[in-house]
Amino acid sequence: MVLSELGDAVGGLIAAKLARAGFPVSVLARGEHWRAIEARGLTLLEGEADAPVHVASANEPAALGPQDVVFIALKAPSLVETAGSLKPLLTPNT
Image (cartoon, rainbow, N blue to C red; front, side, top):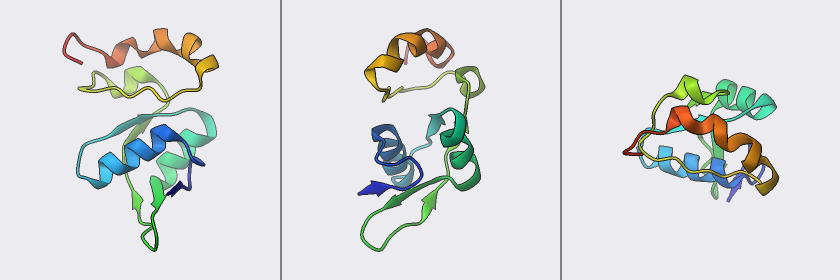
């Protein structure tokens, strides 16, 4: 499997699979990745199937609001600087 818009990003793969399975998915991305998701959705290539899946996306956590489940798929050096900004995604039941 190759996630075409985000290289082989684990977070994009999880998001695309969940969206294809019918779950509502929101994606937090930045810069060029976010612009690509906004413009074209996520495209997961599996054999001959390569239809894009469209997900809600934002480049700031507050724009997505509280989430039921949050998957964090960052490279380790980014986690420390990003963790504090994720608070708008969380509730006591997340």
